[in-house]
Image (cartoon, rainbow, N blue to C red; front, side):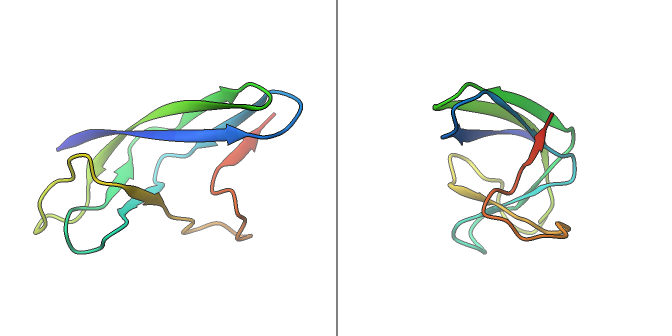
Length: 94
């Protein structure tokens, strides 16, 4: 079942930056086992102005069929597959 995850991205820097949330990125509930995890089905790029926060709306699909679907469930963004573990789980796009 498709869902949209709203991801807030903050840019504390002095210049605008673009960030990409890649297709395949997994979003897990903060409290595991209570609802399904989600996977991004499409890459989404968002431009965040300097010193601001922007919201990216990421289309996703459920990946834990036995669990109930998430509804207003706080999620965390995984960093699976990143070669370098960084504090920021998104790629800056130039």
